[in-house]
Each structure stands twice: as structure tokens, then as C-alpha cells.
Amino acid sequence: MNKELYEKGQKVRREVLGDKYVDAAAKTTTDFNRPFQELIAEYVWGTLWSRPGLDRRTRALLNLGVLTAMGRTEEVKIYLVAAQNVGVSREDVQEVLMQTAIYCGIPAALDSFRIAQNFFNEQDAKKT
Image (cartoon, rainbow, N blue to C red; front, side, top):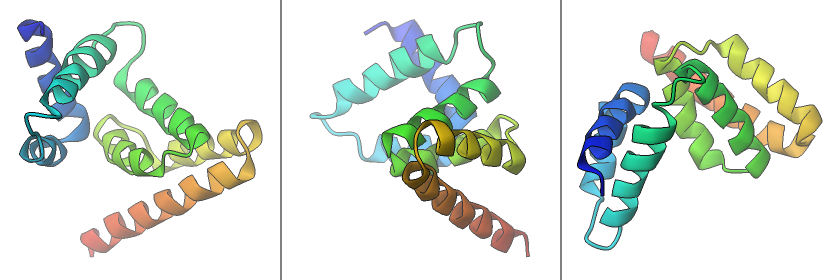
């Protein structure tokens, strides 16, 4: 493991996903899954998300589209939080999901629309 990339990755991961998510992942880290968690921090966050080619907002939008296409609704939930942290609006999410409806299929987009609507409902409820 590259300690420098790991530390950089953990910093980026916290900035994008938030302390709550990263702390929860740390609490469920075991000897068995520790190498996987280190791989995620080092390569996903320390290398990929740290590249200069795309900003974090664009990366989050791409992830929402790709995860919708793959039917990975649990990950869509995670990236809805990340999206807020990097400046993605509800309208941006709506447009990404509309795009996936055509290019990935109505059922895939429908699942993500449901997830997003529930997420936004929870966010709105916290405001009142």
C-alpha cells in the first residue's frame, strides 16, 4: 500500500462522502476486508478522484449515471449524498436520471428516481 496515496484518498473520501459515511466504513472494517478498504482509499479516492481531468461534481454525476445503468441502487444512495457535497443540484440529478432512462432503460432510471425522491424527501423533512 502506498501510504501517501492512502492518506490523500482518505482526505478526498471524507470531503466527498462526508465524515459520517467514512467513519461508519471504518467501524465495519475487519482484518478480512481491510485490504479492500485500503484499495478503495488508495486507488478510488487517492488516484482516480484526485486526477485533474474532471472536477468532483462531474465525477459524482457520472457515478450516478453509471450506477443507475448497473442497477446499483445502494451505491446510488451514497452518491446522492456525495453529489450534494460537491455542488450537484436536484435538477442535475433529475437530468442525469432522465438521460439514463433513454440510454439505460426506464426500469433502471425508475429505481434511481425512487431512491432520489426518497432521499430528497428525507432532506426536506430535516429542514422543517
